[in-house]
Image (cartoon, rainbow, N blue to C red; front, side, top):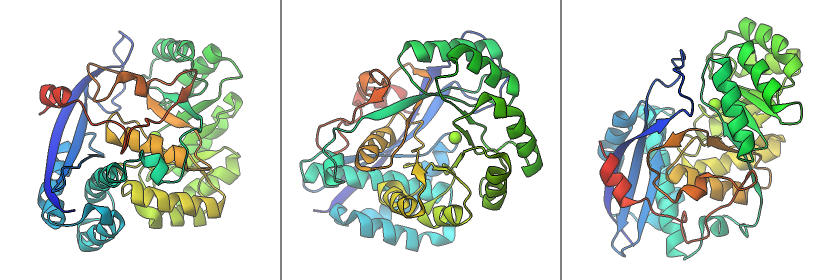
Length: 365
Ligand SMILES: [Mg+2]
């Protein structure tokens, strides 16, 4: 089998944050989410779909795929997915082992695994060694509102929909306090801060937040690769720490684990180097005794890939559902909505679904 075509679809799909009140937050300032969807065609008619991380960097990632990767893929056998990933990383190392280049490689890797599992006529989780019957608990991953009433409303909505875990993207104590008041003591709350603080500020904040008994605090320190800072913070505050969405390749995770920086590792399939690299992180985490918590605020092939990976990982923890509502979805909407707080992986061959071509047509940039 040979790769005969690589096409990139840039999309922007509008979404709602679920509350009418305007938020003062500058978090991901946008009313539409970027998608960089990759289609890989073969001479045997099998088509694979992938998803490269592209929030606010869509154009750059798309160009990287078209100009840096596509010429290296044409004519290759897609069943050699691991070798292709290795070769791309080797040939492109000059252009950055983190960020845009790895996002592009990640998207291509996901599309290739879609082809491999369609060729095998199996759902991806079967290929990865799972029956597909594992329960995958979901958490609602709320927008950053920086507004107490909005946080209260969204927490109540998530609980009503059956979510058993809530993650906030807030940076002030008032919103965490409000969430705890609404959900009570029994619902675990996670706090994702997206690297706002120095080491000292993070320590002060985590001590202040202790009374809310957070399940984890995510990326409290800037820069994200300050593993020594995270490790000290973890020990000094006795707070569970999660990080990893900004780490690319298993080499970066090895440094993180060596430094004892995290309780929960969060590889992101559209950023870390695709399914191939994600699975290396899984093995590494197992040998360091670190729990995997996949990062997946996605609504394209990256989300499906995460469902299949989580099926196959013995120590996969909770699965993220970015708690925003889109004008349109690339797949049947049910797949994004856990039942009784639990996700199911699609059972069709490959990733399980191809994107809706009408949605691609309507929201293409
Ligand atoms: Mg995060």
